[in-house]
Length: 64
Image (cartoon, rainbow, N blue to C red):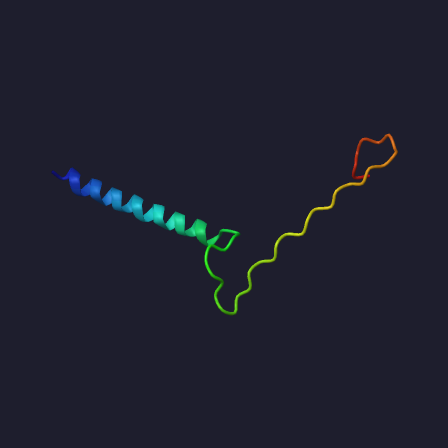
C-alpha cells in the first residue's frame, strides 16, 4: 500500500501547481476583475486604430 501516499502526494502537487498557474494568469490579466483599490487608477481604454483613406491611384498598398 505504498502507492496510495505517492498518488496522494502527486495529486496535491498537481492541485497546488494548477492553483498557482491560475492565480498567475489572473494577476497578469489586462482587465481588472474587481473594484480598483484606493490610489490605483484603472488602465485607459486603447485608442482606435487609424484606417487608410482611399485614393485614386492604382497602387494596391493602402498605407502608401
